[in-house]
Structures are given as structure tokens and as C-alpha cells.
Length: 380
Image 1 (spheres, rainbow, N blue to C red):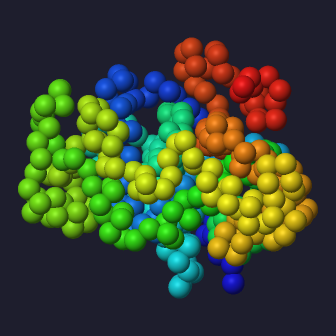
Image 2 (image 1 turned 90 degrees about the horizontal axis):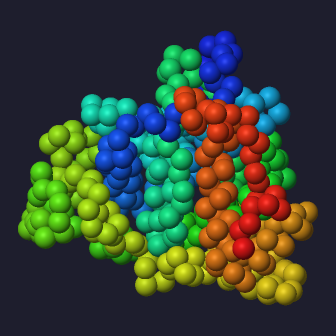
């Protein structure tokens, strides 16, 4: 049986028809950076403890965006996916179990951060989705901050099937879900390519790989400033920290997200850096195309290798020649692919956005969304 969501009984409210943004909600830049870094650190730590959550953080971000209904401008990436996931019961379903695990991490992160700053669960979802990609060696995906919190008592759950990204739905149903959200097949192909890559890395690495690659450099509490201020803790300190549960109070925690040092210094080495990085992030897309007898100049003539699962079948679906066309382009050019992935992720996490307050409202109000198919994007 498929996964069904538990709908709330609240009557429709305008606040749930759109996603409201206030990019200035975090105040000064230092506070904003600290908030983002803390969510990123929590995400990587969760992936370290349970590598199966890597695709789930990304799936949460996609599902939150796919909840948007372009026809009536309802729902969208306002964090409601968290309530849908946590209120759903389907015993023995690993896909749902992992989504719930990722959702619980973000709920706790938001709870802890709210003791010090304003933060919304919707922003946490988008940040964590981008961090999942970066944690395996992928590119830095842009994330617009400032999604306003929706009152929990007024949250409406989208009718989007939660299992749309589980492999239990037909290719036609998946395409329709992206189309209903106002996304193109090009954007769908780029975004699913990211999920395929996450799943392949998660399947091909051992637990020890994850523990070694995501171990951060710890810093003495209260130390800020030069890299020379960083201090290595003992192996016992690090092991004790890695054994901690997610629900510790950050005031008593073992790690402070800091804006000093390289990204790997702050969040830990990227997993699979010996296999994949920003310069060859399309490696699995190349292999997917090759496994089906295709090349950059030749259309695939066979089914995808079974190891690529439902996503391989989706992208190479004979009824979706557009996806096949973009797969060839992405397999041929990593630069083309990573640019499209970044733009598509930024788009799906802002579907239905309405900007509020001052200059942002004046600049962006009623501005139509540009898709990857628009000729004036000037990508190259």
C-alpha cells in the first residue's frame, strides 16, 4: 500500500496559499551565517551517524517544493512537509522511516536555534537539502533564506503523495508531480540526477567511510578569530561527541558552528572525495547513459542498469524524450549539469514565493519565475 498523509481540518487560509519570504529576518550577517552553519553541521552529523539519511534530507527539500500547486498557487515550500511526514504511519517502510529521521533532526535543530535567533523549519529544510549534496562532494547549491514560519495550528497538508520519490510511483506520475508544481522536465532531470547521485554514493560507501570523512575539526568553546585559535580535542572527546544523541542543548553541546576556516574544517571532510567532487559530479549520469547504450551524441537504446533503480528508469523513460536529451547534455558537460542543478534547486525551494518588506517586496513582487528553459538566463 502507498503512503497516505494525515490531513488537518483547518479551513483554507491565504497564508498557506503562498510561501512568504523576508530575507532580512535574520538581522546581521554574522547571525545569519551562524544559523546556516549550525543547520549544516547538524545535517552532516546526522548523516555521519546514519548514512541512509543523506538522500532523505534532499528528498525533504524536493517534497516541500513539489507540494506547491502551480494551478491554484497553494501550498509550497513552507515547511508543511515536516508535519506531513511526521504524522504519517506506514510500518516497515524504510523510505518513510528515513524521511522521519531527517525531519526529526531538523525539528530539533530549529527548536535549539530558536533559543537564540529567529529561524523557520522551512529554511532548515532547504539548507539541509543543499548540505546533503555538498556532503558527498557536490557543488554548493544556492539557498534563499527568509521563509516565514507558518502557525502550526494553521498548517495545511498538500495532497502530494509522500512516496512520489520512493520508486513506488510510475514515471508518468512522477512527471505529473513536477509539472503540477510548475517545473519543467529539464528541471526534473537535473534534480533527480542529484538524488540518483546521493543514493549511489550512500550505497557504495561503508559506514567507516562516512565516519572518517565527516569527522569535523573541533574547536574549543568560545574560540573565535584566526585559524590558530583552533584546538584539536582528544580521541576520547571526539568519540564521546559522536556518540551523543541529537537532542542535546547547543548551550551544552560539543561543537559550535563557526564562520572561520574552510568548509571542510567546519563541517568535516566530504564523503567520497576520492571518487566524486564538484568537477566530476556528473559521473553517475555518465554511467547511467552508458549503461543504456547511449553517448553524448547517441540516444540510449536499452534500459538503465538496474543499479540505478527507479530514477534511472524515470530519466530514460521512452515517453520522456526531453529527459533523455538533457541526460545526454549533463553526461557530456559537468559544468552544464552543476549549473542547472543549482538553478533548479534554488527554484524548487522558492516555488510560490511572495517577498515581504521594503526593497525585497519592491524588487521581487509579482516577478514571474524564470525556468531553465528561458532563453535569457545567459548560462553560457
